[in-house]
Image 1 (cartoon, rainbow, N blue to C red):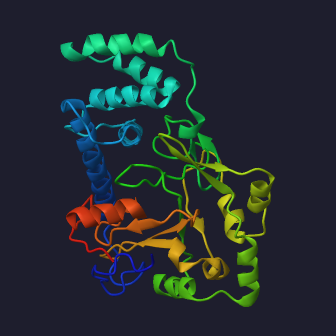
Image 2: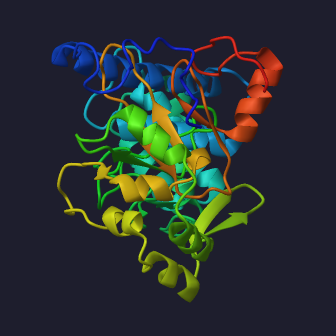
Image 3: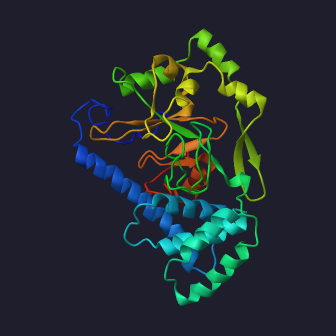
Length: 336
């Protein structure tokens, strides 16, 4: 995981503070354009679902993709993206998966738009039909924040982030499922290169014992016919979350409703991490690197070394074997 991004130019070390610092306005433009590219990429799937008579995409992939788009465009919809198409896909797939409350909300929103004549009758019929369903969403579809363990609604005015700690949800750019990644940042006195060395080192004996004591994973995987979810365990999970792990304690230290701020780690926290659980966005041009930790090591993740997007490991392998390229940026890739 720590090796992700190495084919890219390091630009004098590539870390924050090394080389020239990128112009702040250009840096903001870069991340804004990157976010917009994700929207257009996701919308291509929704567009195909809306326009083509048949689709090979799983219902949950279309659902997660539409939910991602609607959440990301709460405040602004980029040119060329149809919010009607997003809401229509979300309403239909929500109803199919048992998210009846979300489906009703999406159909209500659609009623405020001028719909194509071919759509209007069908939308009105489905809006009536969904009112016969329970006014609730399937618990299997609800999203739990991996930082603060808050159960989030399927759609909120906060956008694609946790309603409590404001941590942005990190998604696979293939299935658009939420990934168990939590962002953290380095203090000013630890360079990115030093952080990589600390993570790569074996922890001291006492820390290794404590790490083995924390092997219990409070997240439990549940695989259903049409969904795959993670839930918190019972008393054992509460004991795990109440452990003396300084990183877990730091994750729970946040001001509800305040702007998101990544957790700041120290040397001891970095030594306690396993290198396969840490992922890094290594940006060129003096842009500070972004650091992430996989909170559920049992879920294998992959990262493109060119665009820095994340995927489930099996999704990445299937895409690379099929086309030998990244599903998002289409940079050439080889199966390792």
